[in-house]
Length: 331
Ligand code: AQP
Image 1 (tube, rainbow, N blue to C red):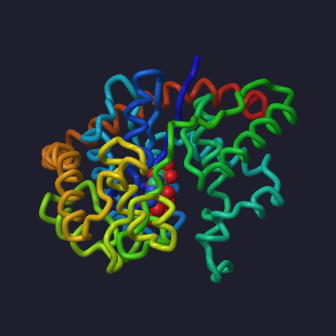
Image 2 (image 1 turned 180 degrees about the vertical axis):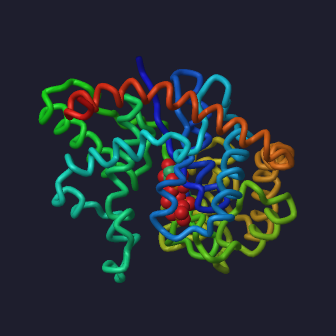
């Protein structure tokens, strides 16, 4: 049976990068696959999270996912810490993965930056936890963006080594799931950096929790250049902010970048930004309204996550039984 595992960190509000680059595709996957959607709070604490904010952010991400169309009844939606099997398998995989493999992970180098000695050990072993997230459910497919491809490769290597070391055919090798042209949304303040939840400037991103006025204000303040929009994608070269806004327009309209530029060619940014705002609000407003409704009932969201956690354990526990037996735990 095909089983999809997807994870998202509750490190802040979900933004349109998460929505257009990942969540929107996950909604479509539900039609074809059994899916497990996991809010990965254990990954989030690899960098400092204020505990009370983490609780709020976890609820907010859950509300954003449900409001975007994830169905917690037919699929499993929960936060990672509700199922201890992730941590349990992760430890075993720490003993399977090789130091040299982790040393090659580029995301650790990027996230740890220059202050590597002061990064948490968890940030370093993050890919092993990610492998455990996938393998503990014997997931067969994982939708991955460009930035996560290396981690999925590592999960495959770990699965293969575990199966071979212990002579047990427990873990299928998870496959990447390509979900159409990936939209990489860049910051509204700097077209060269990715839109990110943890960017200190709230003006750099449009959050799914932003109402129509905030969306309009952020698009109005988005960095641009003095020239009108050109008539071809090639002519956007060297204009990263214009390029980003054209891509965002294309993603919201469900059209190609080429069509987006031909529709908007010759417009001044003031006009284009008005059109982009109308388009963005038409997609985001229903999601935002539903999110607000859900967030007014935190117990309802907690109930969904608790139920999802129990159903997740039902899937992982038999796998952990096989793993324990293979490793030689419990006499
Ligand atoms: N700007 C983006 N454009 C397109 N896709 C994006 N994703 C994130 N940012 C963009 C995709 O969203 C999914 C969930 O990501 P995540 O929250 O687990 O981690 P992330 O990639 O580290 O996201 P952020 O927003 O940048 O969070 P922080 O600031 O905490 O690091 C992934 O599929 C990701 O590709």
